[in-house]
Amino acid sequence: MMIAMKKLLILPLFLMICLLSNCKKSDSSTEESDQSNPQKDNVGTNLNNTLMLQAVNAIRATGCDCSGEKMPAVPALTWNDQLALAAKLHSEDMVKNNFFDHVNKEGKSPGDRIKAAGYTYRFYGENIAIINTDEKGVVAYWLTSQGHCKNIMDSRAKEIGVARANNSWTMDLAAKL
Image (cartoon, rainbow, N blue to C red; front, side, top):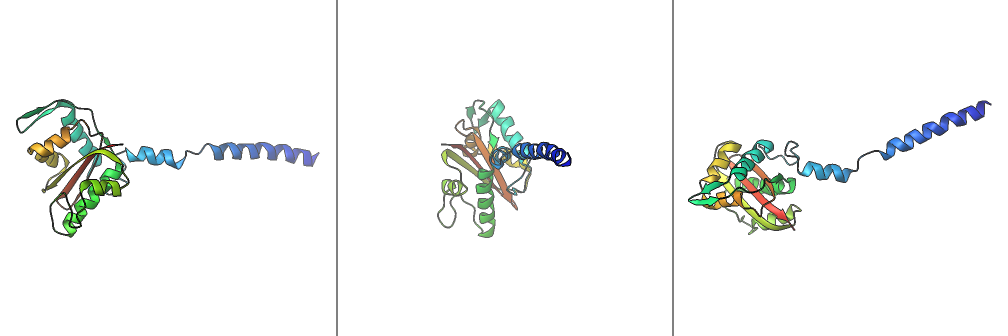
């Protein structure tokens, strides 16, 4: 009788453990959702990612005047950590090697850096700045330059990543293949 009762207790316990272990979320779905969550800074962008995304998307939602060229409203961007990593590494490189350019001293373009960060693109654009300001201030600054403004308003861009090192800012905008 005692052996039969132990078997009855062990079977439900075994089934419960099996069920609980199968209910765990997969790591790949967590990584995918974290990629587009600006509140979780997986990269170390040295800025408020949510505030940056909101500032850019507020402009995109209303449209703007890019140095005399009217730009219509375009869809909102989503945050991408791969683009943020490419932006971070470029900002850090500009500070470390004392230069200010889209092409680094090894001849790597924004497209090269974005690919190296693991992002396969069909379109990309990049804005850089050296300015002592915050997220809203650097967006306002970029809007005063026709090329930078047009990058922000480009409807081909679907995702964004931005980072800064000291006062060196990099914004990478792109769309995947």
